[in-house]
Length: 193
Image 1 (cartoon, one colour):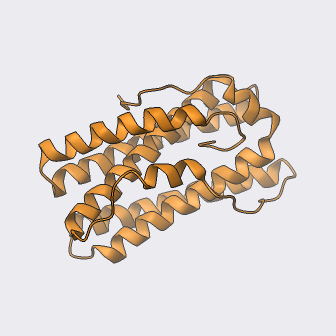
Image 2 (image 1 turned 90 degrees about the horizontal axis):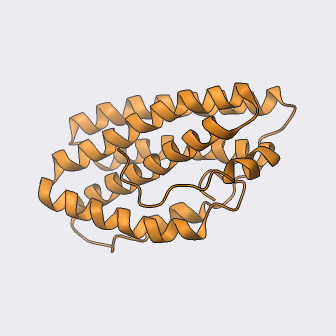
Image 3 (image 1 turned 30 degrees about the horizontal axis):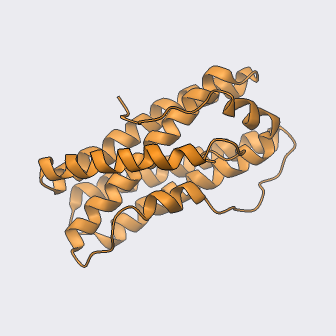
């Protein structure tokens, strides 16, 4: 369903479990950045009423996810660490060339967000199936479904604001690119690392 070209090695879940404070902090910041992306899209494209409505709801949901992750950090006696650069997102964000076409930039941003959500969904699935911590495994199982909804939302919006054939071509190219990029990740205690 997600279209990802390369699955995450399940051994990544062991890296995550050995470094729970790091993975939870990284996850918390991912949720904050997702909320920020939703807010940015609302501010940049206020003329798209459906987008504004969907992004307002998404920003609230992402911040509620941040709160849930932060609570798990506190419950384990950890503290929210400093934000770290998400190299994966940086690499994915460079796929589309800069353009002065405002509408095309929207499509690019929506597709990039869809891909990040798809990979997060896939990583949460790995965590839900391989973590020994049953509470966290269950937590990630619930979040996995939410991330899948976000992925489909962004992809649906991209298709509604652009020519479906062209959007699907761009999506396919982005997925192929991500399939190569992700080969360099999966060895660190980051959600996308």
